[in-house]
Amino acid sequence: MIGKLDETLRFQETALSLRAQRQQLIASNIANADTPNYKARDIDFGKALQGALDARASEASPGLTKTSAVHLSPAGSIGAGDAPLLYRSVQQGSVDGNTVDMDVERNQFADNGVRYEAGLTFISAQIKNLLTAIQG
Amino acid sequence: MSLFSIFNVAGSGMSAQSQRLNTVASNIANADSVTSSTGQPYRAKQVVFSAVPVAGPDAAGVKVDQVVEDASPPKLVYDPKHPLADDKGYVAMPNVNVVEEMVNMLSATRSYQNNVDTMNAAKTLLLKTLTIGQ
Image 1 (tube, rainbow over the protein chains, first blue to last red):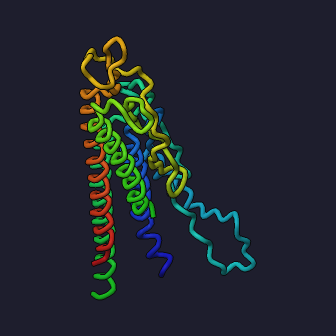
Image 2 (cartoon, chains in turn yellow, cyan):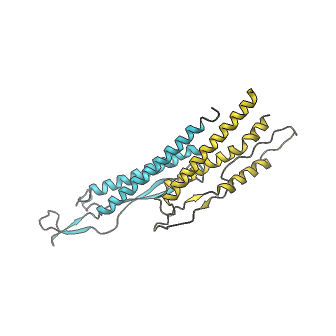
């Protein structure tokens, strides 16, 4: 049963973790808007999500040895560590080698924030559905 | 939890920008200081930012790497009645460009505001996260 619960929430949970990770990346870009030679970075969200879902589905557990068939497999960790960190292409270069474009970053930050909130709404709705199914 | 480290990232940005604002204030305040404790006219100071990893490799905060002094020569102003004038009547004034400093101040203020907004957005998202399942 717990496995099924995990299964139900897996997609949104993975998406939410990646959104949080991306939010952090964009925050770094905004904080470093005046740092010489800093290159703005981001992840390809679609590919990162696909990669994280694949990694969790294969349940690869390199560090643990199972001595019995009934042992549980640990769920793979989620993170943008699997997704390659890309560099943003420059629209208008600056003399100090910094590639942070504040318009793009603010735009992406707001967009990512709204999508994170959407993910939260989806998870809450899923939990409500499950509660309805349990309580009748 | 990555959303928490946004506070560290944006906070480092805010403290770096406020230090930049501090040097701007010092430069503007000393735009006419013809002498100092070293006996030389005041020299404009600028901060140099550098990215530092915060809570993992992919989150970069900011720190003030060093404060450099502007190497450009002091402005020479002809004022023979000035007590610090040299034998030709010129006074060495600080190499502070007030227009540049004002632009620098605006830029630092905007960057600071951006970091504050970032932090507020992260806070809103975290508070929303706490309401999952309610």
